[in-house]
Length: 140
Image (tube, rainbow, N blue to C red; front, top):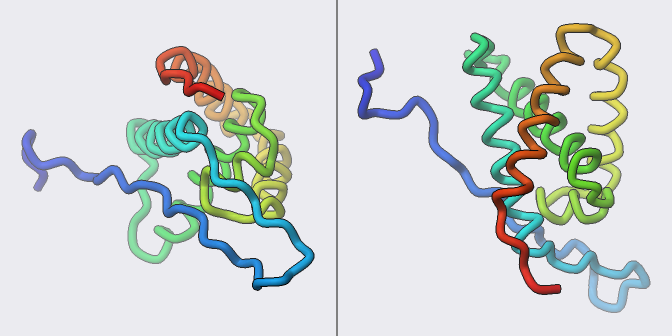
């Protein structure tokens, strides 16, 4: 049983992207994400997780991996749509490939045909707008 002083979760930072390009490769490396973008994406991922837990959907047992990827997909989608970040910027902020962000956006768009799922994502998008106002802007 959880007590009021012991949280059920821990805020885990998004792993920084690791360079995958070999030296001399013709593929350019993605520049590191801005502090603002990383912070926005970390907050949004945690917010999505907390909202799912608040409505009673928690990952248990074998479904934890799937639930974690669904949370990340929703967070990536909302970062791309609500914050108007490019897929490359979202990928860099999450430490993933651009194609992973594209896949996440397609999956969320497909699932939005379900009214309950659509309502949840719309709630995350509304909250993301408020978060965007709170995160300090970094100098470009």
